[in-house]
Structure formats: C-alpha cells, structure tokens
Amino acid sequence: MPIIGRKEEQRELLRLMASEQPEFVMVYGRRRVGKTYLVRETFKENLVFYMTGLNNVELSDQLVNFRTALATASGNVDIPAPQTWFDAFEQLRTFLQQNNAAKKVVFLDEVPWMDTKGSKFIPALEHFWNSYASTDPAIKLVVCGSAASWMVKKIVENHGGLHNRLTYKLKLNPFNVGEVKEFLESKNIYWDYQMVTECYMVFGGIPYYLNLLMPGLSLAQNIDKLFFSESALLEGEFRSLYSSLFLHSEEYVSIIKVLAEKKIGFTRDEIIAALSVSDGGGVTRKLTELEQCGFIRKYKALGRVPYLYQLADFFSLFYFTFLEKGDNYDSETWMHLQNTSTHKTWCGLGFERFCIANAEKIKSILGISGIATKTYSVYSSEAQIDMVIERGDRVVNLFEMKYTALPYSLDKKDAESMENKMLLLQSKLKKKQNIANVLVTTSPIKPNAYSARWVQRNITLEEIFSA
Image (cartoon, rainbow, N blue to C red):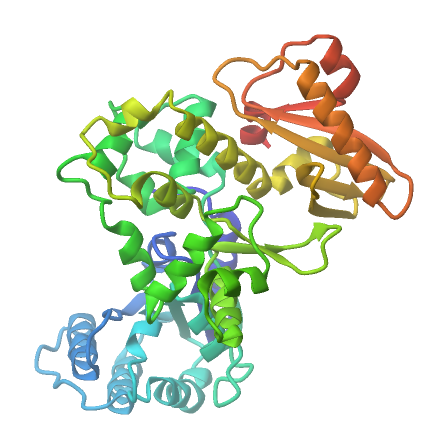
C-alpha cells in the first residue's frame, strides 16, 4: 500500500537522505501511528540495517535480537551474539565499514524497549554516534519510539554524549480526517462524511486500527467485529496500549480514568485529590508524559487560573464510555447502542473533541490562517463554551457544535443558549470585541429566523474534510 498523507514528513526525510552529511534523526509518536511504516517505506532503497526492540525482555534477549538483525542484514549467519551494547555497536560499525552503499540508513525502532535496566544502551549509542557514525556522511541514523517521554528525556534533553547531536526530530501525529477518508478509500471503503467522522471518534486517526476495518461491512458492523464479537481483535488493546508505553501503567490509566469522568477536564490539584495520592510531583510527571504521548491536552480556560487537563485520545474516550465496565456484550452490541442516550451523549462529546482537534482546518475555512489567533475555552457556573478563537482583527468566534443525523434546525432554546454564551464571553474579555457565532454541524443547517439572527457562519463536515 502506498503511503497515505505524510507528504511534508516524507519531504523532510528525503531531504535528509539527500544531504551530504551524517544525519541523526529521531521519529516519535504514539503507538500504532505508523512510524515504522513511514520510515521503512521512505528509506527502503537505502535501508541497510533494521532492528526493533523487544518489549519486557532482559538485556540478553535484546542482544540476541540484535544479532539476528545483523545476521539478516549482512547475510553472515555465523555472527556471535554480543555480550554488551558496546559489543553490539562495534559489530554494527564493522558491518557498516564493509558496506559500500552511497547512503546507509540505520534504523533502530522502539529504542525505549532496548534501554533495559542497567543495560548501558544510551552510553553505547552515544559512543557509536560520536566515535564513528557522525564522521561518515553516508550514514543516516534513525531512532524511533512510541514512549514519547523517554525519547524526549533520553535523547532530546540528553545532557551527556548525545547533547545537541540530533539533526532532525519528527513527531508523527495521527491522520487528520481527510487522510482517514483517503486511507479508507484505498481499502475500498467508501463512507459518507458523517460515518468517517464517527469512525474518527472511535479510532482517532490511528492507521493500525483503520487497517483492521473490512470493506463490505458498515462502520457499526466493523466496530461489533473488532470490539464485541467472540474473537474481537481489539478486545484487550486498551490495556496493551498503555502497558507498552509506561512502567506501572495502571497509575497512568488511573489518571486517564479520572479525566474521562468530566468533559472539561480537571486541574492538577483536582486530579491529585481524585486519586487520593500525596505524591504531587509524581502526578505532574505522569501528566507531562501522557501529554507528550498525545493522550491528554493541557489547556487554559478563560476565567480560570490553573491549567486544565482534558482527555484528548478518542480511543480512550470510547473505551471508558462503552468497554471499561466489561458488560456481557453480544456480537451486535454497537448496533443496539445506536439510538441510546449513551451513544447520543458520546457522539456530542466526541464531535466537540473532533472540532477542537481540527481547529487549524476550521481557521482555514474561516480565512484566518494568516491572522494571529488564540484558541481557548470558557467555563463558569452559568455556561460552558468549548471553543473560542480570538482573532487579531478584533473579532472573536464563539463555536457551537451539533452532531445530528439530520440537518439541524435552531429553536428558541438554542437562541437563548447562544445569547447567554455571548454575554458570558463578553464579560470575560479584557476589551470590547465583535463576537461572531459559528455553528459547526454535520450537514447544512435549516435556515430559519433563529439561525438568521444568531449564526454568522455555519461550517459543515464537507468543508472540514475538504480544507
């Protein structure tokens, strides 16, 4: 399958390949986001050595794994297993010196797993780069990992031999909605905008999950097959996802569970209180790591001093809404849930997160990509505004999001809600500005007197997908 999207990422990687100097590249992003596929497919013509770390194994197993990778790359089955990482990188140096390729890509995948306790992996990697690889213009060293916090701490913020050694770092994000649609169509899955949006609200633009969807089945049938059937492929994915990224993963899952309880999120102190722990520093570190991995977002709400932490991962939100209780499901559970209040509430919340995740596309639709903007939320006891974009041209866009199966028609209650939110926002702003209401809907709204009075702009799913 050709690479879907990732155009800018490919351009940067190919630029590095064409350079006449050694390159030390770091690629990171959450698990299943397609890092390995992107690197291998982009560099496949020049990939001379590839190894992926093993999760939860001893140093000796990692070194046997290295020996297997080197034997495969060199064709020499008699290579002995190294005893240390210093031995391993010395063997790799010998192999590379004997290789006459004009460009030599060395790809070390899931390096956080290689760094087992007491292994001295990082010092050995430092020595390999500083004593040899950095002197050979043909070598392009690519290190990759899903544990973003490890990658940042051990490589980006390294204060030892790897300090300032990176020549490029690439954070690979999940697909945007347009890329999700393109990916599905490459698999002969042709769904309308609303079904693709609901798919995004379940899987969050993660290529691995999307690749499991089967053509010929509806989204509901696919979800039942992947989560609720007797042989559900993603039944244990949630726990596996967190345990592969974090030591003592249950502590991180506890934070995610707290954040799933309240749509606006919690402050750090509120999270500590909810967890009934005294180690505030430990919670702060875990919040930072969860944010680096893309599971949560830290944001400012107008009128509130402390930052709020909000669950941002669609897959985790889906899990805590429908899977966490472990009820006795049948093979058509999702079909039965379609018209329930739980499903309706989840759709509304998921669509709000969807719009926040696509704020840059929405700015493009409004024609304000080149204007200085601030995006934030407003919460008080009177009302909640999930997204506000304050613009440099003295206009403030107040957003309302409505996820409905049919075209939406505003009523008196909607109008009163919009008026209250406008008054709340104006009271919070430091200076008088023009407030323009933007209604984001799944399809164009039905025009009436209320929409004419209270909606200055209606943005539809079709526009978001096309932006």
